[in-house]
Image (tube, rainbow, N blue to C red; front, side, top):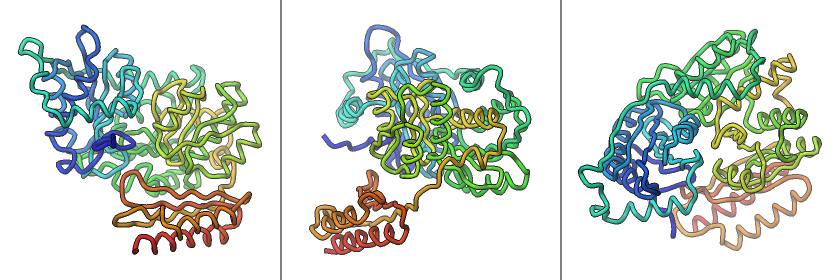
Length: 448
């Protein structure tokens, strides 16, 4: 059964386009029915980011959940990892995050978490999808069994305390000047407060949400604003979160961007030296740079690659017993602490290394030189260009040319009719030529 609504990270689309009140209501009803397991009073926690459409979706989902007899606990704007954590700690049957992550305000989405705080499996999402297209009038709660809804106070303090406890009690951020960019998103209250409580000199930007400015020229997808502020304030480090704070990008004292691969390298080496890695290696995706793989190899550490998407990283971490994984985009999963990517907790682990080594961030966060990596997209209207003989030949030829000196990845996008061609290797000219040959072949196939 192909999935009609769920993508790689919940349901996402244009607010009042794909993500309508009607759909939100139905998702609440369907998910509520799927997660009614046992005779106890069932409850769901709902968090959101700062998009204008969050109000509309939140109240529609409240109607859906209460109509099938689930009680609803409303958290207000909170980071995605906080919602996952609170789902488990508040013993809820289900958690919901209303967010389109790093997208601009026009989009929104619905992410669901099970009772242990993990994102749902494909099988459970399929069960929910099946109910979305079926009449469920006869399964609605009786009048006396309808759910209640209420807002929960103090959730910010719970997350701040949780985040602080991921660091040793004696570790302080005293002496560090930190610029934090919250992307006018879900973390705009909790993260600056937590950094201040840890002793940092905090300069906060991206903390004035108006419903429209989330991720707009700020946050982890636009770190230029942060880099400029770091240089202006002569700060030691900049931290950029995205709209729901499940990913992070850092900026060093010179204003240079530090991506997720470098962060993984820093944490992996530190944890390995301290004996904190559950297994000698990490999990990352096919998009991580070959330079990271070679760095880890030199440390005696392995690297397991998965398809793109933090859910696939987590699946492999759980299946094989790793406790560190992530993506170049800055989704970093630390399973000792969290059940999903947590941008702030990942940043704290790096800050701990900075404080321990007492060296500039530009030195601490440059563990390897990335290999030249070239990514090009080819859009097509219909058909299956990857099955075309010319394309297959170009890919085979490219793999032979890069053999031992680089890596080639050609894949279909999971969200749009686009083929992504990525090549990397020691010789930039060779990589570019290989990628261009495949792009040309795809262009011919798409036009055929």
